[in-house]
Image (cartoon, rainbow, N blue to C red; front, side, top):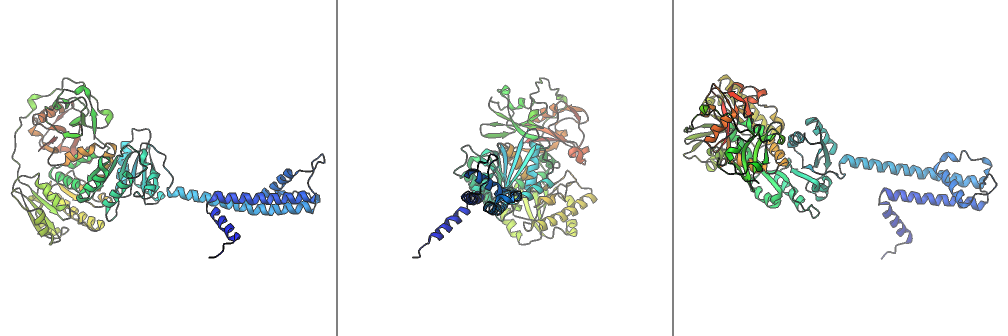
Length: 634
């Protein structure tokens, strides 16, 4: 066994000390300085050639040391020294000055390196975020810009708000992209940090324990659901986490992963099954012209949104009576305990602790009107009648993994003897379609092999015989898939215009950036993309109970939004206030929340004729083609 020498041990101890960083380096420089000053002071003192005071008294050792320190710190001091001081004084002082040059040069280099390192660390976004009641966004994708934009609008009324982002991306790059694509964020500060959302140590940088909501973005990885699940685990299983439950919001792409995510997140996580919501929205919007505008109005923060309100003064009243309690807000349901009921029976009694589900421009606008006279024109109300629904033909162009779910969702809404025609370029999916969505007495499902971008094929399909059109993107390269969708959409719009048709076209875009290229120019069109999920995530981040509202709203088994002919509710050609329309809806056990005027259907600046939550006492004269927007069970 080799003997370790004293010098090796000394060298090892020195290396360990130096590895401790800047403080250790400064400490060694201080030691060298003290040794150098001590040697110079002793040398001068022993020589007997020490400086003297004006009264002839010689400098003591401390005073000689002070002179040595000044020569060490100031190289110019030796130049001002009297040459008559003698060699035994000048030589030690010169050596102290030369040593000082090396020591302080090294010190400046060490400090400069430390400052640069600190600036680089700040640039990388690794410092702890000292924020409270902020919103944390974990991960990065194209969805983040929509989420930030919506949260900024939601926080306009707050004096101070903050959004903190943690992603595996350069801090400066994140800030530049947000600045370019979101623009001015008003009172909301955006703080970016670089790190992995699945690393417990990195998570602590954004202070999740002080947050009011945590939004997890799946990102653009091959398996986004696993990323979400790991991030939820990193949050909930952290031994140093807060005792209070988190408010976690995220989306899950695959239905098979939803139960696992719920099991991990428990009551702390509000999870959206993205494919399920997108399929339902695609089906509902393709069947009703203008419904897409209604959904956009309710899901973003720029217009009317859904809020919860407790009104103890309405305790004991029925739900039908509560509908007339507000002038500037629209009641659409109640929350009793943990259960949300949209459009419950009109005779449902309200309890003092029930929460009303209300549509309003802002929560500050939810005020009881105090009106006892509503000016309902009972003579204008039409008697309820039931029309038998007619069979529908739906054209589905393209196919992907959501296709079978869309077909089966469509089956829940259409009348018997309806038909769905599927056109796709891959003939091998015919067997898959027959297996997953077979024909029945409600709806027959047919398949036609063909290229959806072929104009000749689209002309042969005869668009006029279909009530609805859905364009699905193939789930391959997003840019290539969106390019195919865009070409098909442009062809269909041209055919529709030349044939003067009003067929609603719902298309799907995989990349949100391509959504702007196919910008909607007609209320009958709707582009389904991850932007819808982004809007929902933003809404749920502000109020977690909204998830139950959205689930009920988009579920075919619950209450949905419909646009129905105004002539079935009130007389046309005469002014009636909206209380009258609400009274007509009440007779049908429906909640009227707005209307659509046909004369403004082509005006984007007027929301394509759609008005949600109108002032109840204002009068409108309805005409043929106008619709009432109601929340109903069918």
